[in-house]
Image (tube, rainbow, N blue to C red; front, side, top):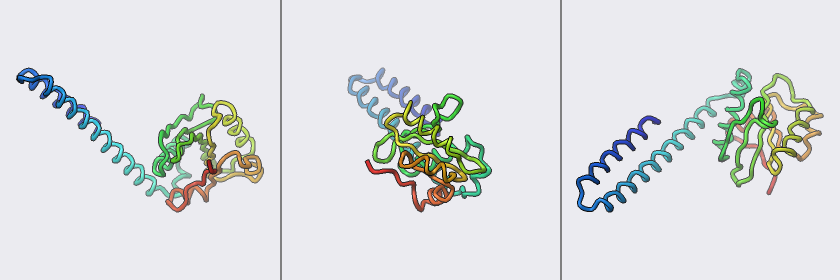
Length: 190
C-alpha cells in the first residue's frame, strides 16, 4: 500500500505536466489537477488509516491473555498501544526506552485529555516503588496528563494503596476484559 500512493501521485503529476504543456488554459488545468492530487492523497491516507485500524483490531482480537505472557516488554508496550487505538484513543505513541522519562506510551483519550501510560509485563505483581516512580513522572515531566499503569500480573496491595486516585490501574483481569472488548479501563471524569 505504501508504494502505490507515491506511484499514483507520480503518474498524476506527469499527466498534469503533459496537460499543462498542451492546454490553452494551463491555470485552470493546473488548479483542477492539484485538486485531484490532493483528493487522491486524502483518500489514500483515509484508506490506509482504516486498513491499519482494522489490522490492529484483528491482532488484538486474536491475542488472548495467555499470549501476554510470551511477549517481551517492548511487544507488550506495542500491544497496549494497539488496545488504546482500537478503543478510540488518538495520537498514540510508544516512547519507552532508556530516556522515556518514566512513561512508555503517550496518547490522547477519546475525550481529548493527554494520557501517559506505564506498562509492565512481569511475572510478579508490581510493587509500590514502581507506582511511586510513575506518580513522580506524572508530577514532573508529564504534569497535566492522566496516568494509566498496565501490569500483566497485577499489583501488590501496597501498590494499589500507593496509587490511590492518582492513576488508573489495569491489572491482569482488567487487561483480559479490555482485550476481549468487554470493558475498557474507566478513566476519571473530567
